[in-house]
Length: 225
Image 1 (cartoon, rainbow, N blue to C red):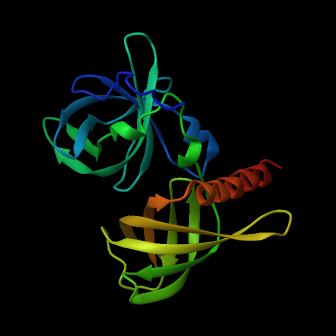
Image 2: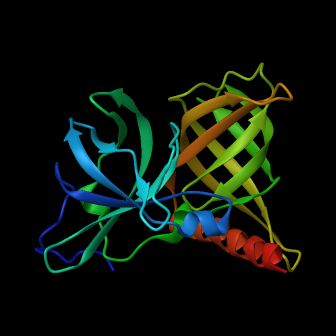
Image 3: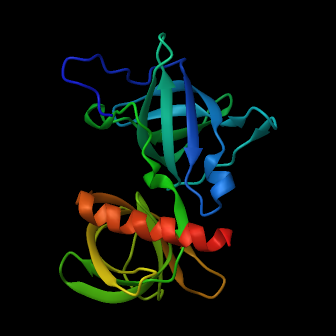
């Protein structure tokens, strides 16, 4: 449930604990909760210590563009959730992870499961500023973003905003399209020489997001069989 009008918003603050889950196509890994501490902040981001998985005592290595579902806990024990992603790193006495600050308007008491991802080879039409258009194939998708593969020659760079149309097939044989705009948060080069671009949604209608999440749930059920 969203926070009601007039209800105090618990924004993450320096020295508070922050609990995060990291988007993954591995459902078991996506369920793991890591604990961190907020060490610093600036106008756009907060800096956290390397997250720790307390049951195993293992640290979680994060990468630029990783999608996060994060929450802080109020003194009354209420969890306040927000979605974020990794912006970069800062070398201090210890290494800190720079993540996007919480948007007060999107804080909620209900965790959004949109950060879960599944492997998927789906057709994606991409437009760059309305001038460059091409078709790519997704590598994985989720309710918070996607990654896709394209030729090295395609002018896809970190920080770009893309317009995309995703062809979404369902188990019953129907096909739907989902439109969204997204920011390229990371570009890697694969062993096969393709560009792999990681995209987080910046503009997407709720019906289109639900189309993608429905596909993800159907795909997860297939993997469990």
